[in-house]
Length: 186
Image (tube, rainbow, N blue to C red; front, top):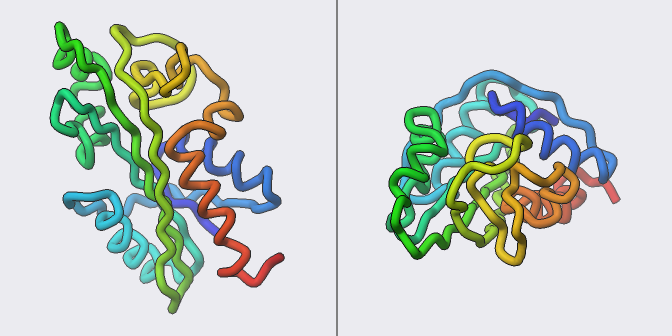
C-alpha cells in the first residue's frame, strides 16, 4: 500500500507505526488535490478518489490540523497553508498576551482500495500552545504544542513516544485495528 504525502515527517511517523505491526508502506510523493472544507473528514475523500483514479492501488492519506481555542479553532483545516505562510512564529504572535492557550490537534487517516469504500479514522490530542518554540524534533507545529499532562512539546519527544500520545498516533491505532478486516489478513 502507498501513503501519499509530501511531508517526510508524516511519512516517518506513519511508516514507523505501520512497521511495528508488520505492514510496509511505499512513500508516494505525488501531490494530490486537497480541497478546503469545514472538517478534516470531508477533505479526505476527494484526495483518496483522485489517487485511486491515477494509481489504481491501495492508498492512504492523512489530513491534520491544529485548532487553537482562543483563536476560535484557527488555523484548523487551514493549518498547512498557515504554517507555510506564517509558521509557528505567526501562531505565537497571535497568542501573545493570551491566557487561554488550550488547543487540540486532530488527524484523519483515510484509506481506500480500487473499487472499495473509504475507511476514515480520527484521532484527537488535547493540550496547549507553549509560550515559545521548544525542541528540534518533529515537524510543523510540534515546537509549540504541549500534549495534555506533559511538560514537553512534541518537538522534544521521539517518534515512538509521540506515536503513543499524538492525534496521528491515535488515528493510526484505530486504522491498524481496522486494516486486517479490509485486506483479509489476521
